[in-house]
Length: 114
Length: 110
Image 1: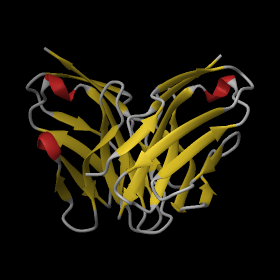
Image 2 (image 1 turned 45 degrees about the horizontal axis):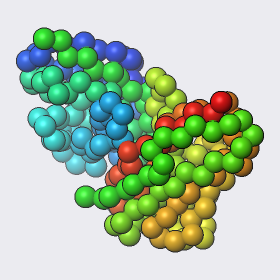
Image 3 (image 1 turned 90 degrees about the vertical axis):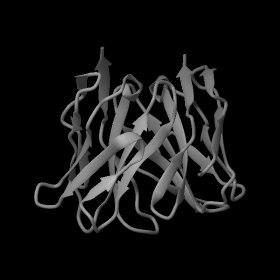
Image 4 (image 1 turned 135 degrees about the vertical axis):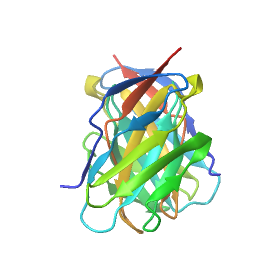
């Protein structure tokens, strides 16, 4: 079955420390992968997206993610976390074109401690 | 960037009543979607549409109807609201392979 797993429901990181949020996907065919962020009581905003090509993609606000076909993973990273990064992060996968649907993981809630 | 708006932003409904959630997008995207989000969970697809006057079922369509009267507007209709439909509902439109989300509607069914 096609699915996305985010194994860490909650992550706490000190401000200024590095961050990695994990995402594992299962998808038949060529996957397109996305990371969205949801700030409190807001909609989802796109952080970055992966299309087949360079496995490392850069996003907004210093975020990047690395695609690994062998590990079926698309982990999100940031070198230095800021308090404003406190949010819920969703990984998602879809196929290409037409009626391709976006399949979401359950999200990882990031808490930033001072 | 896509502009997707939703109304109302929050609503309290009674069990058995009719609820209509509205979504409007200003970027002329073909595809539009309705998702629900339950506390602590990801988004699940209810209905979607790729052209006006046509809608398709998503993964959890039971208890919901959708209507796409124009390119810009996409509504989600709960004919007989139930307690289990308490959730946050998100609308999205899609350009190429990227979906752009509205701010959400928080629905409480009592």
